[in-house]
Structure formats: structure tokens, C-alpha cells
Image (cartoon, rainbow, N blue to C red):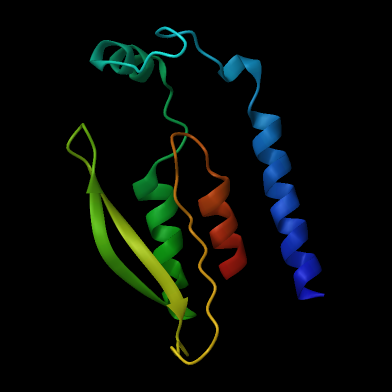
Length: 124
């Protein structure tokens, strides 16, 4: 029953991602097959509308897991605009190296949110 619930959550998140990825989200910057330079990156960044914020959407949600899990900040990433992004590991309070382990990454690439949303759903 638990597996069916998890699979259902995964399918729901994947469908949400597919539904929000439309041709309206496409952009024509640069030359196909050629890596972007600083000018193309700036042009892309200037056209983006901020839809979510790591510091207000992700960090509080991960920190809220500390009642049920050990939440460990293990590093930080910095961006081109001098912002720091804390990196977290979340593990069972009953962690044991003698037991089998599962690794789930919840990273975000650009505006893709499925991975961190899935990780949070699995933890709740």
C-alpha cells in the first residue's frame, strides 16, 4: 500500500512537470549546438520571471523535516549573483550503517522542481 502511494505521488509530480513545460516556456536565444556565452546567459536571465525562491520555498520546507529526520547542512553553493544556497542531507533519526540505505537526490536544475518536490513528498 505504501508503494502504491509513493508511485501515485511520483506520477502526479511527473504529470505536473509535463503540463507546465509547454512551447510558451521555450526561448530562442543563441545558436543551436553552440554553448551560450555571457551575453546569451544575460539575455536569458533578463527574460525570466521569478516563480519560486530556494530560500523561501525549499529551505524552510527542508528545515521543517527536523522533527522527524536529522537535517544536516553539508555545504553551500554560490551563484553568479553572489547568493549562497545551503545544501542539506536528510536522513532517518534511527540511521544505521548496518541497514540498507536509499539515496534520493532533490536537486534543482533551472526551473525544474519535480526532484525537490518529490523528495519532500516522500519525507512527509
